[in-house]
Image (cartoon, rainbow, N blue to C red; front, side):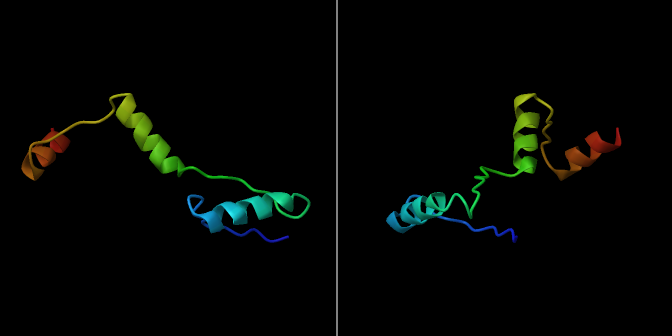
Length: 67
């Protein structure tokens, strides 16, 4: 068994038809829809939890990191 990753634009007619076709092959194909990567989820969680900081410029950023 092989694992393939493809990107399908489900907004197009052809994309919708392709997804419907693949779903009809449930004995052969298993579909796992991935919304976004774990890194993006982690970054969004950091933002929502307030685990971020800001700096005025690069000099200010370095001063904050070194203090």
